[in-house]
Image (cartoon, rainbow, N blue to C red):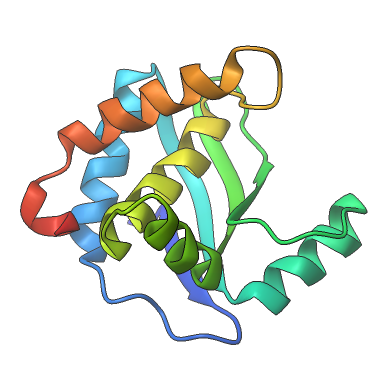
Length: 145
């Protein structure tokens, strides 16, 4: 069986997380939103890497924690998800969260985008945060401590 989720890195080491447990968790999050996981590529990078993607693909000239390219078809979520581990670390400090908790929040955030949940329009950010919190509640606390 081909692996559905791949974990890649550019310009930075892969984060020290339990990838197998994270994949099982993401499967459950997708299922609870009525989806199955197709092919998802998580690409971990640094701030320079995410800025380059943001500029070249979206024409945006700013740093961000995540950029999601959605290839979802029907009930099968697929996409490429870029995550800046530098921004995840600084956001964790800003919101007084652990690095792993913030990292898993961002990992879920990308999947939730693939499930059709947006965060740019009026009221959408609060809806996204609610779904992120529900996803994190499913995750074993030993994984995100």
